[in-house]
Length: 306
Image 1 (cartoon, helix red, strand yellow):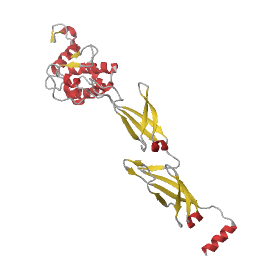
Image 2 (cartoon, helix red, strand yellow):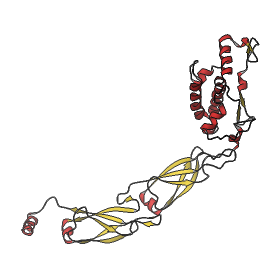
Image 3 (spheres, helix red, strand yellow):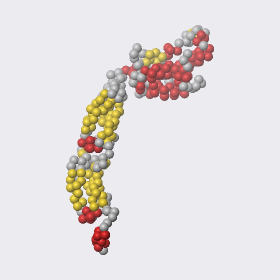
Image 4 (cartoon, one colour):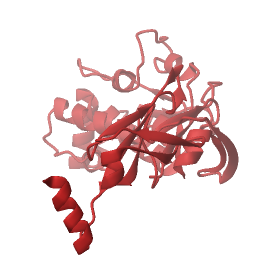
């Protein structure tokens, strides 16, 4: 005889509320809708449901406890002295090969199986009398989304590219177009490429997270791009023109005389164009100050300082 208390993991003197609370947690974990064809999970779900159907009904629980205490020979038809009691009647699997189940209602004011499952999985009050669970199960349900990630170089994120993604667990390879301007940890959703739906429901989606590698020349903040350029302290004093690399070309940047280290100069419109907005490029000016000077250089600086 199955030990329904052990199956649910509750004490033999557990209250109806404790039994319901434990069953709600386990039913959510092992429900077929959550395990996509896993036969072991389905068997566990059936076993849990059988245990709850018995222990949640006061009359059935009392008879079950009497059977465990005095033996099956003490009953017949569920009453003492008649020979045996068959508790499998409380749980009936649907048609062969089907994941649909039928359950009897819990008695004595205790919440029934289908009420608990409905509350866990979004059911409503529109149940029919012959099979209270059938209306919820008959509705089309969308399949689960599949998640994947790919890593690309910075310039590929700027220009756009294509990559192959392997979909698990099928191992199928799919070519994915990555749009220009995608940011680090940006997501691409491909509708209908996920897990199959249930009861005629649509397939889930494939959601790809794009990770963008750091670049030695550019940093991004929104649509703006940040770079730096290094000039000598004489160039900083006198002003100069210096070649600066943008996302698409190289240009000559005018550095005004007297520019201080850390100054940022803006190149308008040289950032990214995403979402109808065009960013700018900001160039930080770094000044290379020599660590050693010749005697002649020191003399010239002394004269200039005086």
